[in-house]
Length: 242
Image (cartoon, rainbow, N blue to C red; front, side, top):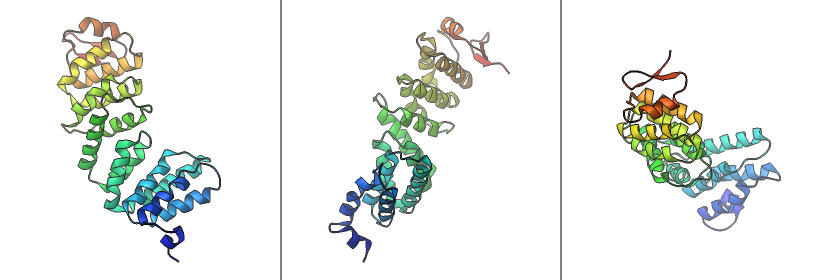
């Protein structure tokens, strides 16, 4: 008896969707969930990938089992090859959680330039939007940090205004090495805001130092926010002590 016969009637995609409740079952016998994952891995069509990815939206106990199952899902999805690209891309765009898993998958499915394109597009689409879980933005920002691509800085800069300090920190870390001139004044304004957390101000100083931007027009405010190991030289440039 084939797997599709075992699962009952309906088309392949319908059979995959019927397994979603088992894939996301947090309690009870874990073999039920694990069997569903394996069944989905044997269905070679995109809907099966979409259902498999829902496993990343839950955490089960013990954590060793959770990790093992998620790694198993990673291998199953990877085995779909190009069939998985669409569902994983959709998952990256629509889900707030498990962004790191989506990126890991895309990195093995696509060339780096294409993954960067997707990340830049996602960052741009999320600009100004409220997210309950800011981890998604942090993960995306970390992904582009250190990459030299002219599309990155314009997509990153708007997130300097995010309400979450972790997002501001990740944005500043990404902007520093890009030396993106339009970021100079927003960074200086952020640094001058007395209500901003000290760790964010320190990160802003680091971004200014790495970018080599002058503090012209903001010298007094920057001096008031100065903290070790940074200092302001006579040319109005933020420097870092050795």
